[in-house]
Amino acid sequence: MKPLLILLLAVSTLCGAQKPNIIFILVDDLGKEWVSCYGAEDIKTPHIDKLAKDGMLFHNVYSMPQCTPSRVTLLTGQYPQRHGWVNHWDVPRWGARAHFDPSMYPSLGKVMKSAGYSTCVAGKWQIDDFRIEPRSLAEAGFDQWCMWTGGEGGNLKQSSKRYWDPYIFQDDNSQTRKDKFGPDLYAQFIFDFITNKKDESFFIYWPMALTHGPLVHTPLNPDARSKMDKHIAMVRYTDHLVKQLRDHLEKHKLSENTLVIFTTDNGTSGSISGRRNGTLVRDGKTKLTENGISAPFIACWPAKIKPDQSTQALVDFSDILPTFAEMAGIKVDAKGIDGISFLSALTDPESKTGKTHILALGSHPAKLSNGQVIPALAFKPRSIRNQRWKVQVDKNKQISHLHDLKNDCWEKNNLIDSKDLEPTKALGQFQKIIDRMPAKDAIPRYRLNPVQAWDKKPSKK
Image 1 (cartoon, helix red, strand yellow):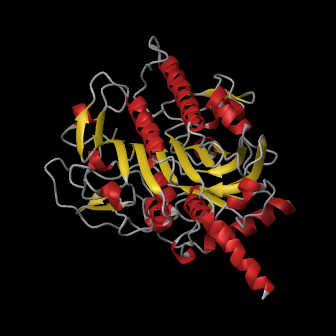
Image 2: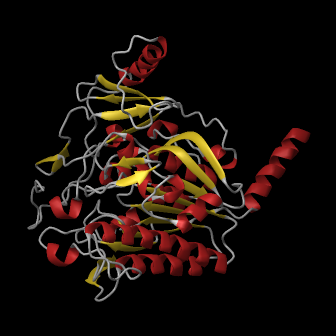
Image 3: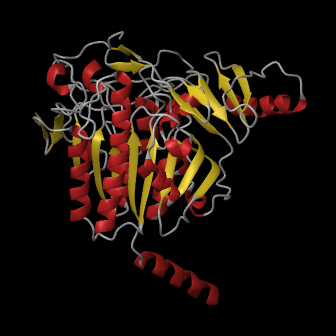
């Protein structure tokens, strides 16, 4: 009877404890070369750095190379070759017959809501058209929202604004907020949500509009004029909002049991280069090189994470859903997702999570045929890495590049033709992974929305 008694006590204690709050910050289009705790030299991000100093900095985290694949992957826990969004698809602007349909997929919001969390999302969604799907965020599991609509087809002039005079969807309608700065409105909405839910467990998904173009001046740097000055101003404002969030949590005595994760959806865009650890790093968005997919990733959770930690644990965006589910006490169907929880790595940086490799793929517009988004290629090129080695796989499902990231972090030397034992062994290990992948990637699944007057094919710009 003793073992059973101990088990029951353990379960009782767990159920009686306050579940941790979770805030997931997703910055848009920002590589490690613009975060100073990762070695950025052209900017200081003191408050993001402080978040890392108070928590854990991850070195080996893969996002996807572009917006849509990253966002759908983190929401579903599935890789793009499974969920089908292997290309970018700007739903409101390019045609809303195609859209993210949570009835067809797992959804992080639904998982957290089922665990008893109050849920909130604010910032940029851009995978549904709120004009014809006003309840899409609720269907994805969110109780409250304050979202830039995305640039809407047929309504581009006002809807394209996400920063100054932003066009925002809230309370099931969209309107321009004249003379306001969008990132302030998204942030204040989140802070108000925290205030109202401080006595409950809450999950907040904060997909910031920052730092994606168009580049603009900010309230902190109103005189920014050049392209680079505006970019730096927007990164600084991102850092400023991180401070505001932490101050708000501290004000309500919520810091201790709140996990805050800071990351980005892909590398920097707009031909913007920055120096990192003595090397000039060019913009990486849409690329499968490390500057496009190796994302800054910081976790701070004072109740569980010791300060000033770092980890080499392998993590990619498919792992976010199962990690948060485990934190919330929810079991997810392993057959339906690709990710593996990295919760153990949050409390022990040397922990073995079971993740042997991480993967990234997905970029550039797809094709549209009778309302169905069709991947531009049957098999989308991708990158796969383990602790030391990385391969790039081409559209023919052949390995085109092999890099030793331990000794060549900037990927200058392609060892694909090496006859040495270690590279040859690594190639064999990756080939086994690739052989298990389907020859064709999936196509996105959704209930087809009716044709709208504004539907059109994606521009070539």
